[in-house]
Length: 134
Image 1 (spheres, one colour):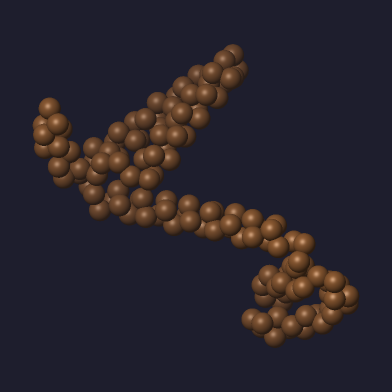
Image 2 (cartoon, rainbow, N blue to C red):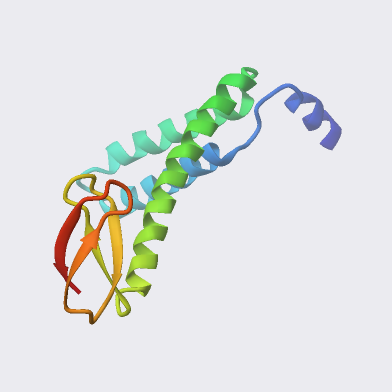
């Protein structure tokens, strides 16, 4: 049985991170359908079915290059979101020691030590000087 399944899946895309994300999204739609029984249960059931159809289509697809490109695009977007939250978490942990300013011309985030009073801040990227209270 195992080798028959391996032969069937040969040359097909299989499972990847995008499929896993869509599957989790389908589970969320199931839970929302249970929570909103009377108002929007039908909509969530349709969304769940659509998510499952997409997962199986992508899993059994023989167009591996296209599925890998879709997965790469998803991973790029995912990494952007994760890195944004990572930056926010780092700023949150450093909030007691540093104050963060945004350059008025290039919008770069600058970090200066707290407790220095009124200081001149020079942007390392564009060289703009501005005043700030740390």
